[in-house]
Length: 311
Ligand code: G3H
Ligand code: 13P
Ligand code: ZN
Image (cartoon, rainbow, N blue to C red; front, side, top):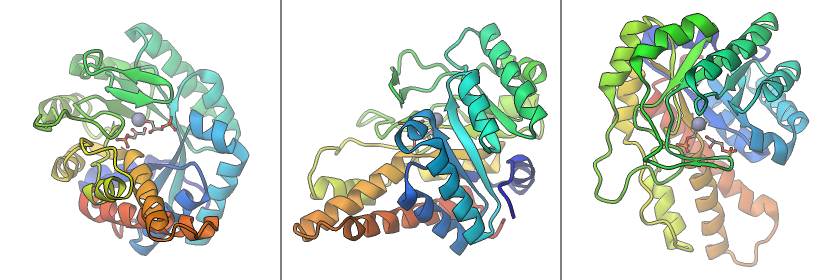
């Protein structure tokens, strides 16, 4: 099976009350860890590439590695541009074989977001590629942009119908209290998601796939290892898994996870060096890193996403 778009995946996910995991990929071990877990659990999966990932690894390497994973697993896999910053980057990914792109106009004034998103949709649809747009702003760090909690804003449900109708987007990322990075809530603060906003959006857009960014749970097992074998992030707090599962039962069809994979990988490498300080062959320390990614993704598929056996 070649790379697929998210169209069919989202339709089934919406109807089945589950979500598809969208995991960020930057190198071979990450691609392999994610797709091994998806293969074991027979789950569809979205591999997403940020502008920063393209800069780090290059479009060609990432595309070739994802093609290899498609060939090896035979799973429905979509290749998606995460947080497309402008039309040119989206066009380059569409021309270069991605099956899905996000145009992130969420920081622009509303009318500018509509115009930019529509321009990307027109080009993408003419090439058989689907588009994710965004309304509302998450807190946290993406690439070099740091949005403070005060500047973040929830999605306004009154805008979503107009936005989807005028742009033609295939899915919509909304802000309901998730945020990028590993510090989503302050210590002592009660983690909360605005399910009322999600439900309002779903009411205005029946059957339409909603996306959650900033959805890492900050898996404590990995944070504990990072702290034990080097220390530095005792206050990392993520989105509770039961809240993510609940959002997947509602209109959320795509859940974005990157930070949890970073933690998993780093925990594996730190543990390796703490226990084997002289084992410096990269294959020795990247093996536990890859295994931890596989473990983290398998856990997401079973506990958070509910997409096992949906391939
Ligand atoms: O939301 C952003 C993702 O975590 C990607 O991060 O832009 O540093 O690759 P990045
Ligand atoms: P996390 O930082 O919560 O993993 O979010 C990742 C994300 O939204 C990628 O677009
Ligand atoms: Zn994101």
